[in-house]
Amino acid sequence: MIHSVAASHAKGKSATDTIFGANAAAVKAAAQYGNEAVANATLGAFLTEDEKLGCLPTVEKVFRTLPANDIVGYAPIAGLPEFLEAVIALTFSDHKPDAYIEAIATPGGSGVLHHAIWNYTELGDTVLTSDWYWDPYETMCTDALRKIDTYTLFDEEQHFNSKNFSEKVKALLAKQNNLLIIINAPAHNPTGYSLTDSEWTNVLAVLKEEAKDETKKIILLVDAAYLDYAGEKNASRSFFKQFGGLPDNILTIVAFSMSKGFTMYGQRTGAMIGISSSEDVITEFVNINQYTNRATWSNISRACMKTLGIIYNDKELLAQVEKEREEYVRTIRARADIFIQEAKEINLKILPYIAGFFLSVPVQHPVEVCEELKKENVFAVPLDKGIRIAVCAVPCRKMKGMAAKFARAIAAVEG
Ligand SMILES: Cc1ncc(COP(=O)(O)O)c(C=O)c1O
Image 1 (cartoon, rainbow, N blue to C red):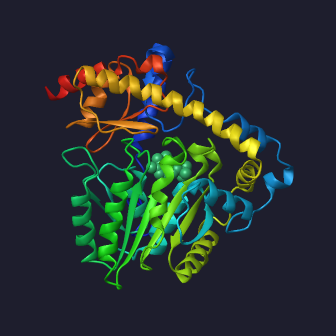
Image 2: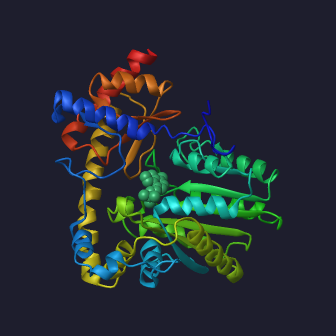
């Protein structure tokens, strides 16, 4: 009997998605006990206070009034020019780095990660990210026959652990010539952390030191999926300026996504922005990533790219979108504040949350604590070192009392 016909590199792979698994359990509980009894803190999508999927009204209006040609037509492989212009301008705002900068459209931020792994690391290389990370980073590296290693995100004072970051960068560059580093900031998934400008300066100091050896190529991928939820527009973007004037053998790639910032999760639209002091590196960036677009998914959603182009080129529409999103940001902040305040009152340890869709509680036995939480109809996502709570998805009324439920579940499991 034949049980497998897969090629050797594909054999045995199967995606057991903890996030969608936890969500399924929450949906089942809601059917059994009624929706009001259940807090579903699993999925990374913004739900309104009445638990409807948030869709920015102005984005929806522009999208729905597109002519048929812009919905059904192909787009250029590299992306629509007006979309790419908008991506760069909206990402950097007043803090555009002084460098050569180009963008290539991809299906969301996921597409950026795929291309960065494929085009900037060798087969078998190790990619570096922090110990708290979005699971698919590992899936993507493994699928592309790369490995993943982590540095400890926080030091004892709960600040960015520059020391361990530096040690890991050095150790990996001693073994391989290309190093891809993924930093998800600002508003990190799963902790909600944002590096300060001086922490970014430290990160770049480490990379500049290592880049003195010109046989080394360092690719810093800033996964900015939650940028639009990170705080005041220009303050949360000020770190971008630091990516100008770097050595030629450091390439910065910013992953732009319309999923969260424009509530277009399912439309699969994003872009990779390359930033370099070398014009040749940026020409190469455009060429190789456009090529890999053609080689993997061809082009991406014309309709969604067009939508962003229209919004960007109409100041009133853009202001309206920002105003609508501001309301979402305030709502998420209020939900997080409830948890943070209650946690403080009962001495429940949480990781430093600055902004964004998630906050995390460090625990020794995440799976067991999540099981215990289910008894209280609280559903969250177990990670390696703790539990992720999607504050983007839980209304304020259900956030109330949640910290105490966590404390009880942790006490029941860990004593
Ligand atoms: C940390 C992080 N990076 C990237 C993404 C990519 O999302 P998309 O491919 O929808 O843009 C997500 C989505 O959940 C995310 O949480």
